[in-house]
Amino acid sequence: MPEPNRTTRITVAVLAGALVLTGRQPAVIAGFLLALIWVVAFDRKILRKVGRPKFWAFSIVVTLLAGMLLGSEPQYFHGIPISQDGLFAGLLMNLRAFSLIVTGVLLARSISRERFLGVSGKFGAAHLDAAFREALETLPQVNKEWQEVRKNGGSIIDTLARLLANMADLAERTPLTNAFAVTGVRSSGKTTLLLELGKRLEQAGWKVGGIRQERVEEEGVAVSYRVVRWNGDQGRIVARGESGRGFSFDHEAFAEAAKWILEDAEKCDLLIVDELGLLEAQGGGHAPALHAVMTGEHIPRLAVSLRKDKREELSAQFGFSRKRIIDMDSRSADKESFIQLILASGRPEVKPVV
Amino acid sequence: MSRVRVSKDGETVRTLPGRSWTLPVAWRQAAVFGAVWGAVEITVGTFLHVTRIPLAGVVLSAAGVALLTAGSMLMPKPFFALRTALVCAALRALSPEGLMFGPMAAILWQGLLVSIAMLLLRQPLVAGMTAGFLASISTQFQAFFVRLISFGADLWELYVRLLEKAEGFFNLEPGQGWIAVIGYLLIVGSVGLAGGAFGWRVGRIAQKYREAPHA
Image 1 (cartoon, rainbow over the protein chains, first blue to last red):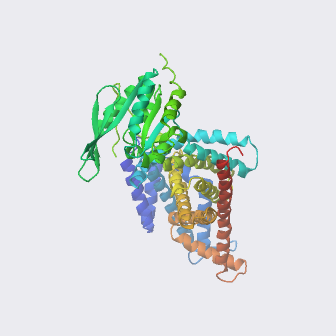
Image 2: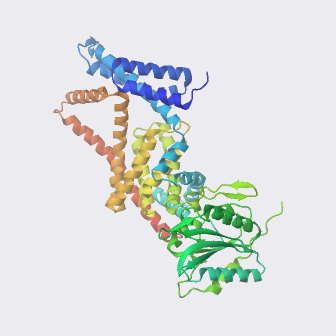
Image 3: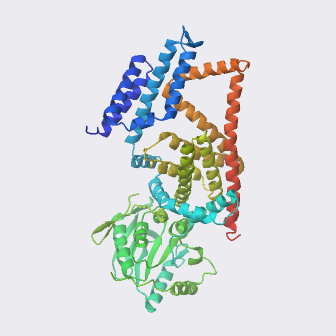
C-alpha cells in the first residue's frame, strides 16, 4: 500500500488527537480506532513505540488501579474490590494514551530537522543551522579530546576540567594560519600599509592579488565605497550612502569582488583583502569569498585590514592571532616588523600539478 | 541579509556560512559545547537507557546542568546555555526515531533555566545549583504532565485516591502523603543541586587550566 503524504498524516494525527482529547467515550473510541487503523494499515513501526514494556506495565497498573479505586459498586475478587466502571475508565485512559502517542509520533515525523531549524531561525536563532553543522563536525573531536585527556590520569573532575578547557580553546581557536591583519581608526594608514606591503612583496618575487577599498568623499563625507582589484583597473562601487540613512550594499558588486578574490587566490602568494567590517562580522560582504578561499586547494598568505570597532569579533571569527595584527593607532606600531613577519612566513607551497 | 553567491569557473560555490569562522563567536562556542553535550546525551543517555537505571532523566538533567554551568564559566556570554541547548536539541533530532519532543523539551528547558539563573544570580555556584535543583524537579513534573495529558484527568483522581490509600496503609494523618511527595521531590532536586555544584567545581578547575595550560 502506498505511503500517504505528509498532509494526510498530519490530518489523521490531528483528528485522532482532537477526538480523544474531548474526553467523551464515543469520541475517544473513534479516535482510538482511527489511530489503530492507521498504524495497522500504514505505519506498523509506531507499534514499537507503544509496544515498550514500560508503557504496557504502566497501562496495566493504571487499569487495575482504576478498577480498584475509581467507579462505584465494586465486586470482590479474592477480597479485592474491583469496579466495572473503574475498569472501563481505566481502559478508556489507555485508549486515549495509545491514540495520543500515535498522534505525537506522526506529528514528530512530519516535522523534519530542517523545519525545526527553520522555525528556530524565525525566533532569532538564524545561525542555528550553521552551528548545528559545526557541532556535527566537532563530535569526532570531542571523542578525540576525551581519549587524550584520559591519558593524563587524575580524578574524574580533573579529566572533565581538562576536556572542557580544551573544548573552550577549540571554540576560540583560530582556524586560519598565516593570516595577518592591519587595524586602526579611519585614515590611520591601513590601506597605505597594505599597498606598501604588496609592493615590497612583489619586489621580493611574491605574486600579489586581491582587492583594496577606496572611500569616495564629497565635502569630507563618505558617499560611497569602491572596491578595486589589486591587479588591473577593475573596480565596483559596493556601498552607496543614502542621505542620512546609512549605506545600501550592492550584492552584485560584492559577488564580482568575490570572483576577483577567488581568481587571485588560486594564483597568488599573498591575497590582500581591504577591508573587513560590520558586514563580514555578520557573515556577509567578503566573508563568503574568504570562506571559499580557505576551503580551496591553494591557500595563499592573507593580509587584511580590519575595522577597529569590529576587530575582536572579526579576529575571533577569522582567526587572526593577536601577534599577527598591527594596530596603526598604537605608538609602538612597527610597520617594518609587520612586513618582515609576513616575508619570514615564506611563500605558500607551490600548488601541486595534477 | 542576502548572501553573496560566488560563481567560479561556471560552478556555483556555496556561500552559506556553514563553517565556524563565518559563525558569530557566541554560536561557535554553542556549537562546540553543544557537541560535548550531544556526546554526553548519546553515551550516558544510551547507557542509562540500556541499563534501565531508575530516574535516568534526573541524572541526565543533572549532567546537562553541570556541563552548562562549567561552560558558562568558561564562555561567559549571555544566553550561552540556551544557544548550546538549541544546538544539542538539534543534534538530538538526529535520533533514528526522528524528533522526540520529550528529551528535546527537557534539553531546551535546562538551557533556559541555566541562562536565566546565570543572568539573575550572577554567582556560578548559586546559579548552577539553583538551575540544577529546578531542572531535576522539572523532569518529574514533565513526566507527570505528559502522563496526565496522555491518560487524561482521571489519572489525577487515581493518583489522589492512591495517595489517600497509602496514607491509610501507613497510618498517616490526612495530608501527610503530600509531605512524602514533597520529600521525594526534594531528594530528586538534590541530585540536580549536586550536579550544579559539580559543574561549578569542574568549571573552576577548567578556568585554571586555561589560565596556565601547562600546569
